[in-house]
Length: 341
Image (tube, rainbow, N blue to C red):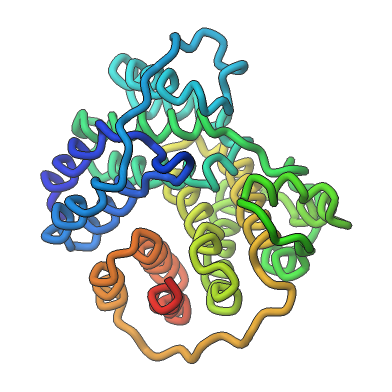
C-alpha cells in the first residue's frame, strides 16, 4: 500500500466539506482509503480529479464548541465541530481522543445516514496501519470524520442495550418493515416508532457477554448483511449498502478501543443495520442472483473500474467479510451493486 498516495489524497480532500449539495455525504476520504488499501493507488488521483468537482468548500465555524452536549447533532455547527476536533487531534494522542468521543458519539450512529461512523472506521484503519507515529494527514482525517459525526449525530429511534435472547441473524430476519417508503432516511427513521413491534425487535438480540462475543457478533452481522444485499439490494441499491458498511466500520474500529466498549459497539452497529434494513429492504425478498466463483482481488478490481464510491466501499467491506468467514458468497454482493448502481 502506497501510504504517500493516501496522504496526498487526504490533503486534496481536507479543504472540502463533509457534505455537498446540501446533505450528500462526501465519500472521497473513504473511497480513496479503500482504493489505496487494495493496491489501486494509480486510480486515486484520477478518481479525485472528477470527484472533487462535485464537492463544496469546508464550512466556516460560527463560534467555538463550549457546551458539546448542546451542539451535538446540530449541522449548522459543522464548521465549529471540525475546528474543535482539529485542535483535539493536534494536542492529544488520537487513540485518547477516539476513546473519549466514541461512547459519546456511538448513540448517534445514524448520523449522516451512518456515514459519520463509516468515515471514522476508514480513518481509524488508516491510522492503525501507520501506528502511533501516523501522519498528520491521517490525524486530520480522523478529526474531520469525528466532526462530521458530531454535527450530524442522530440516534436510531428505540435503540438501547440489547436485552433479548435472539441470535443476531434470526433477529435480522424477523425485523418489521416500515410501510411508508417515502422521503429520505431522516424522515423514514422518524416514523420507525410507529411501526408495530419495532422497539421489541430492536432490543431482541442477546447482548455480548465478553469482548470476544462482541467481535463474533459484529462479524456475523456484517456477513449476514452482505448476503442480504443479494436478496434486497434491488430495492434501494445505494442505501442498502450502508447496512453492510456501517457495522464493518465499527468492527474495524474495535482494535483501537478499550475492549470494555465492544459490547455497546455491537449494540449500536446492530441498531444501524436494523434501521437501514427496516426502512429500505422489502418485506418479501427476491431470490439472490447466481453466485459465480470469484477471486477477491478481481472483485475489488472490478469495483475500482466501476468507480462509484458505494460500489468501491461495498467491495472493500465484503472482502473483509470474506477474509473473516471464508464464505465466497459475500463477494457477489459487490458485483451485484455494480450492476444495480
